[in-house]
Length: 189
Length: 353
Image (cartoon, rainbow over all chains, first blue to last red; front, side):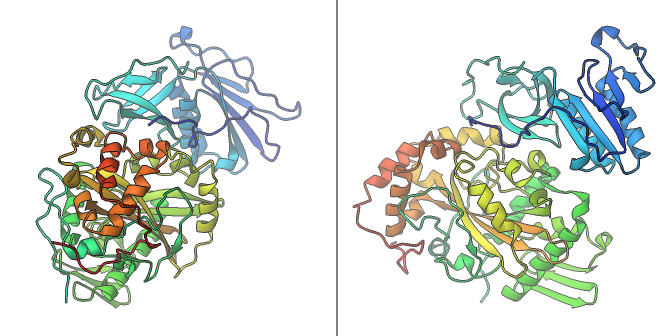
């Protein structure tokens, strides 16, 4: 099950403003994001506070900025916001791959299309791994093999990515001969 | 004359599945030449082509009742093997109509469909079903229309939505699959869900296949054969249950390989659906043991040649690594190297005892 390249994984670009949009919202899973907008256009920025804030919402620099305690906190609020949005919004997403697709799926449920959402990967390359056997999500995986939090199987992290699940597939590596588990290698960080 | 269904056979535990002589001779053997490599081997789905399995839109054979029961067992353990995204409801009804019309037309002794406007009456004699329902009103069926009718058909099915010049796998009934997961892949585009297949991307197979399928016309279904090998006649070789069936691959020995090793052939059919413009993809799985293949002279020689020249990437991808050499050496002893006819037909009308 060794894969040479990842066909199901998107190639991410850096973010650039889509001038056909009427309103622009950038969401980021960290306070450090990069986005260059023409001076005559306004961009609203929602970001997640650094973990050292320990639940405090940092004061925002401008009225167009808004902080959140966690990615989950931001996405919950986004869900509510998008329910009230109209045509013309452009959504820019910056963060880890799991965050990019959690936001994407939230936006798509609210009726936004692929053409209205722009994604830029930043931060850790650690993977979210969905165990194909027991459906548990394993977070922050940095090695080629991980023991599943749910069922305990040693999962090989397959280079197959589901945007809907926002996760890579984990498949039991020693399903044929129990205990035939090669050493895990540090691969994604 | 109706089909004699083998109602008691199993695809798990004691694996009592067997092919009759007639079923062997009608098997859709996938190798028309001595070498195998991926290609866009798509052809019109009509009669002719070397196997009676192609005679009808949806082939029904002696394993029908047992395969429907096996499907019900899988769904009972894991209902997510059947999922359809909400926007695909028109395609669900299209599927139900296509299957009911095809089955009742092609096998009138076993299936009957009576339509009076939207009041439909469906009779499935092999499974003992008699159902009146309103076409277009899902509340008149015990489950969604796609699940309802694909529980009564052999083989897996997926629904492809066509948009943005692409195909998205937005639904499916997947209980007899060769190692792919609907729960993981649902919603993916054509290239995404074929992501793990080696070699084929690089030679452009998926680009060309997608272009071809986007132009698929209503009333002109197409087909191709795909294959792999499975230990024991097990239909559910899903990644979900790999911890349960994976160990089978280590049980093969030179002594038991002829009975244990099965060629697994997928008759893949594609139908454009009329209302939804979606594509129904049928993946019908046929299993035949090595010892039954050996009873057909042409097939045992051809299988030897195909396996002996299979690229190592495909040996690994198809999961044959542990027993490939055993199969090749066994078959080599039965291959004199004589030229074989092109095509998949068995070239014999009867089997040796």
